[in-house]
Length: 331
Image 1 (tube, one colour):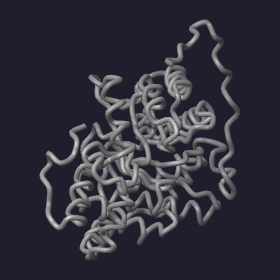
Image 2 (cartoon, one colour):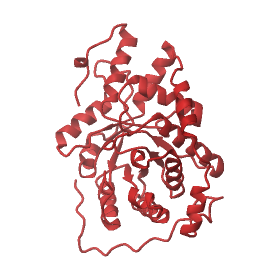
Image 3 (cartoon, helix red, strand yellow):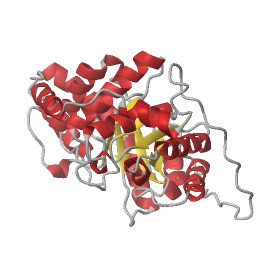
Image 4 (cartoon, one colour):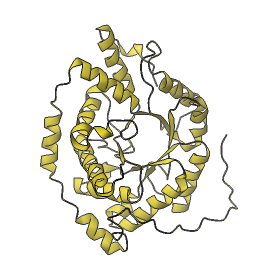
C-alpha cells in the first residue's frame, strides 16, 4: 500500500541536536569545534593505502575458502534496481531472485536485501514477506541530495511507511565540501529520527569527496550522527567504490568501535561486478576491520550485476565447468 503524505500536516519541529557518543560529546558544540576535530583526524597516506590494497589483492584463495567467500558474498548483496523505468513487475522479479538466487540449487543462500526507490518499497515488502530479506529504499532526493530538508525527511518517512526496513540516504556533498559540517551532521541526525526503527545507511558519494582525507572525515561525521552503515556511493558517479576508499572506511569503523563501543557497518556500492572484486573486499574486511564485520549485519555489497558472476563461479566450483551467462536470470 502506498503511503500518501498529508500536505496539511504541520511541519515537525526541529529535534534537539543528538549528542555524539562518549568520548566525543563536545565536538559538535560549534562549527569551529567540529571542524577542528574532523581536520585533526590522522591524515591518509594515499600511496600507502593504494600499496596496501594492492598487496592484499594478491592473496591466494583456495577452493574451500573460495566456496565460503562466494556464499558469504551472496549473503551480503543488496540486490538493487534504481532506474527511472522500474516497474512493480521488475521489483517482484528481483525479489524472486533474492529469495532463490539459483533456482537449480536450493543450497544457494538468499541475499541480504532488495534495494529500490521508496515508492516501490511496498511492492518489495509484499514480495519478500516471511523471508527475512530486508527491503532497502533510497531516499533524501537520491542520488543528488539536492532538495530542502523538509522534502528529504518527507521522502524518508514515505519510504518507511511503505515498508522499508533500511534507508539509504545521501549526504549534502556541497555542504560538506564547503566545510559546513554541522549542517551535514544535523541533517543525518534528523534523517535518523525520521527512520524510526529502520536502519540508516549514509551514502558519502566518495567519488565527489576528492581526497581520502575527506572520506575519513565524512565517515566519522556520519558515524557520530548515528548512521548504522556508511556507504561509498550511489552508483551514479564515477569513480564509485574503490578498494583504497573501502580501506579508509573500514579503518574508520574499526577505530570508531574501539573509541565508542558502537559497531557501524560498511557498504561499498557501484562498480563491484566480479567474484574477484568481491573476494578482494572480503579479504580487506578481514585484514582491516576484522572478522566481526564478515557478516551481512555489518558488510554489504550494493550491486545489480555482481550476483550473476557469483552464481556462475559457484556453479563452476560445484560442477567443475563454467556455465554461460544464459544459466542465470537477467535482472
